[in-house]
Image (cartoon, rainbow, N blue to C red; front, side, top):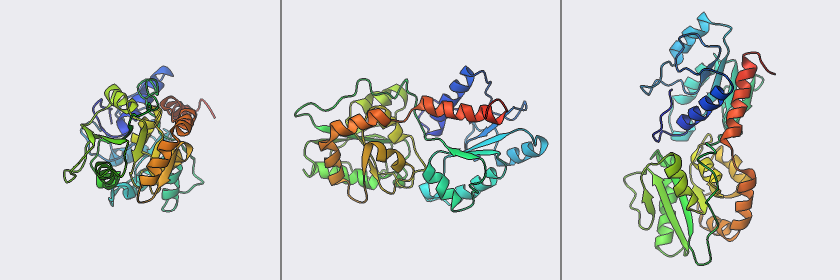
Length: 311
């Protein structure tokens, strides 16, 4: 899918970053199978967007006609994420055509290994990163004495599994005085059934406007469940924000263990603890934050290997 600059989940910014890295390394990037490429990079085989030029059936035909052209498959989804029942099977069929697989988190690799992926096949795990020219910590800071600790979360999707039950409960805790000295900021979309009582609300954002809003905050909260990896918490971390994450967060947990604390049902005490230890956790996130540059370089190295110029 050709990328878009509007808010469109994690795949679009990933494509922008990869495209720019490949161009710097001398590659030409196209979004169709014609003319015949030296490498096919499959991110999402669903034909659910007008910008997508080929899907699984076109890929099958290409594989038969071009059996030696390498196919790289990046797996970044699963049915458990949004309570669907068709993604896992579609990815399995796509995986059968691939020469090399990249999972966006170890959790997602293990999820599919328990279902159908053979771990003896060529593969690796490359964690997500955001554009470091936009999502960076410069300008972020710890709260001053007497200043409220601003918690933030953002999602372009309003799917309930993104954790809106938790965000609503935190909003109510603040409104009821159970979290004195805290403010919740919610950016993006949310279910229409939610009646916010205290939160600072902003519509969907992306790029620099979003990063500026994140850097005004001090702590990132995610309640997303069974997330293959996600980009929301990555963008927060790259803006210098420690993470409070749900222990059923899937791939998010891999990042959260480096610079945050997890909770299971009620985030109240975890939020308080991270806030009390904010200098410590800010140091951890600055030392261990994700990197879009590193991510794009890792993918470019895999691409180079697959066409025979590396090992």
